[in-house]
Image 1: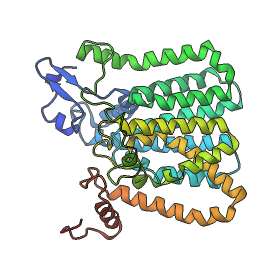
Image 2: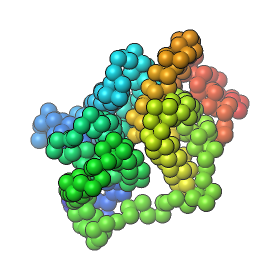
Image 3: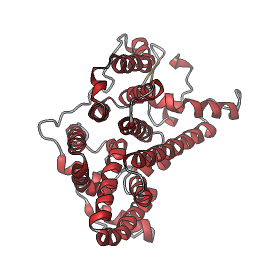
Length: 379
């Protein structure tokens, strides 16, 4: 890892993902290697296709590999959610597909799979979907060693990619222990999880030791949860500048979804409610609550598998008790998902308006369907 051997233009071509310390010859990145692990098979294929003499690993073939990887993990994550919903309650295939449409196009998940697949979120989404599927399936009976290994590996990668997502891992373990209380005292579960955390994090720790001289490093120096005493809750939820609801409108159904889960599983509803409250608070407490250039509240992308369970529970309840309401709401839900899908294809990733600039947001939304509008005096 000699930074002085990196071509001068690679840093700019990488989007500023790292910097070079030429004095020490080190490549310095604040991001962890979890996404790279999931991208590795696709990158290897790209290197094979490009050939050893035709690419510096930053050519169009490798960029295409990242695009393919994002779509692959997007589809695989949705398939896992489908399996999770079928595991939870069979025989509601139409409602399963409605839930998947809401997750794929009614949130900002599609954007981070097809438009910006180099961000970490679609990979974390897949991992959370995998762990959630395994946690729900544990209700069927005891796990085999393969299921435990997958669960532990997935959780370790979730934390490595975005350490704050230990919130999701804790929720997953809470679900697991509620479904199978005997696992709480199982030495095998804790041993396998601890071992996988060590194995998965070892490359990152070796990198930190090489670059910083320490085994564990907080690489986001100068960044932190500086708004913890005055969290930007309203902005995180509703601001046109990357707010959750303007860019992932089906999250508006989350409270109803939690209520519907509560009707059949009170403890699961409490776990989900606590988890969503914590992740929203951490977003609102972050020094840059809007997370820079983004489409919507991107840290919530990987929590959409939990949202899917809530939507599915809500749709099932409506079909059983208010079928007319469900049939009337379905076209509106699909329309909202379609509008959001078009918006994701059009919207600038770096929102140029102010925090509460609804006029510019409305302009961008209109341009999604009607093309460019006159720029003078848009406010």
